[in-house]
Length: 248
Image 1: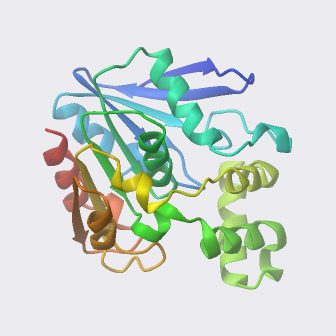
Image 2: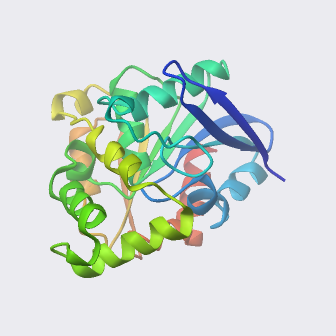
């Protein structure tokens, strides 16, 4: 059974994380409008890693899950999501660990690498080259849907996001802060990352670029395409097996 923990970062925001298992630490970063529970525990990824001999450390990013969700714009400077991960790694005194992220968590993991973290290995799920480097039109569509709901340019997306926010008790202003905090990443920055990385994308996930193109930029990156779309692939046995095998 996982254990719940909390700590406070420098700006006073309290972040929650869950732990499961013993052994080599692996930090798991979830996606937008999700949580450690929804992204990693419910699909069985955390359990599979723990059974393989890992100490799973899965935070709820600020604005999500059991972590604080500040609504003031000042709580959302550029790259604050990556800074929070760095603070957790420092808080836990991790020096030899693995790192993985899915969707927004994949973009955040890449930012942590760009900012100098050197895990032994990294898994970037649900993000290709464009999704890692630029929030771009996808983030703009999320912002429109959060602000305008059914009156958004994509009414179905607006309805879906508002249902998700209501179901999880998420604050629209905090989620807009998440989007505002995204920082771009250049090809040169990705090319300088030496960490062995596995990039996994669903074959029906067409919103975030290509893992083959990402691997062409990152010298130590291996691309993997699996059946499924953006929402489904993370819950497949193939995804779990690929992640566990790469981090073994």
